[in-house]
Image 1: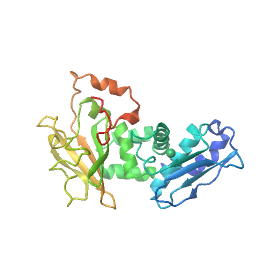
Image 2: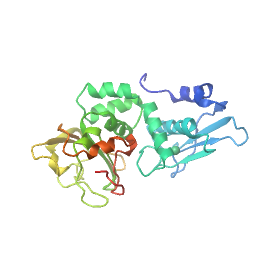
Image 3: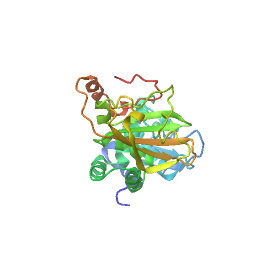
Image 4: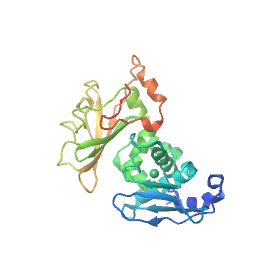
Length: 283
Ligand SMILES: [Zn+2]
């Protein structure tokens, strides 16, 4: 798998680079199996030139990789501030807005390390996107489909919206830059929101739709013109109570009469989503 970064090489090399000044060794990651726990980075109390990483060995292999990359992010970015970092499931993988800055930064670092932007941009710009294509790219990078989709949303020039549903309610929502510029937003039918009626996401009899189903964009996004279409994709995770929805909308001109999106542009890229209506949505 030449496209996938070898984290073992990164771990071993780091102390020899300027990013590892003052550190002799990062020990090989060890498993620590606890349901509430995803990963940890800690300094050896008996030898301050040594650091160690632990990860949840019950997680799927792609998540373990992401977690180790996240802990390497703490090592590079934050080790001068703390002696140890305990990362639960919420802090790793989603990058959602309610997290502390250092957790979002570590997620961002992991995404960048595992899914280099130049490769990703080249792959997604050369083909028509569906879940098969994104799933193949996720395999090449050895990351989860969810992690790849979050990264895809940041790079695509298409109008795209990604929604993660947990037990039928929205857990987080990400919009691509052009989706935000054209004010494409999904229907808010509650707090937290549920999938709108008439969508694949609302249809419990459909667990997977990787080819995409075309429908009127207004079913999802009430502010879209009636003639606009979108393609809806659905992936249900093994546990069935968690669903990933990807919406790819027809392109549209930015709504130039509304300049508010320009303010959004100055926010950090991790501030792009709205979650559970808890956050101001920066209209
Ligand atoms: Zn962390």
